[in-house]
Length: 304
Image (cartoon, rainbow, N blue to C red):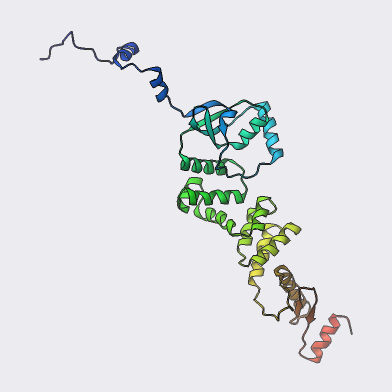
């Protein structure tokens, strides 16, 4: 039978906070500071924050930035920015550069921020992914961000899709934009054409044809459906071998001539040949099979 020892140290359970602290080794102020968590929301001086070297957005609309600044002046910062701590009094922006820049424009001295721990690669991945998900990036900026995640973070397309919440097909559609000619990429960046227009143009293998259709889209403000139909019909045209210097090399003009040729053939009920060169000179041929057929064509032309 066990005998209670009155001298035995009582269990810490229920002894109170003071007793627990007395049993624990005393920590210096310095040690307490060292174990204090760095994560969380803090008010940080704007002067202590460096811009994000991995920022995927390359252009900020000045008018939109001023509107955000005006809103911050009235409402304050609703969504904190995200930073990582480099050292005491030194932080680096992970995401939220528009809010950061707009806050400076509004004359704020401090800004609420989530403080996260990250190495350079994690910094890059978080910056790209958070900006893709939160900011209104154009399609080309998203494509470049995806490409950087694949190349610099050593991700595969399936992993990338999981990270950004997109399926592999969607990711691949964005990446294909980077294969378009620089002029068309600039058109996407400057919002002259949409992602839908660009996806249709990708299906044209010939660069000259891509550029010609792109020019037509911009000048005539064609819808995505019209561009898709134009590309489909252009790709279905047979390759015609013409003597050098006689046939037009403009793919859009060739497409329009082909459509006109079909309309003429339907109008005359006969095969029609319509050709044009780069100087807008050409010929129309309407063959006939008999005198009666010729008279029929002449009647349509109202010549007899």
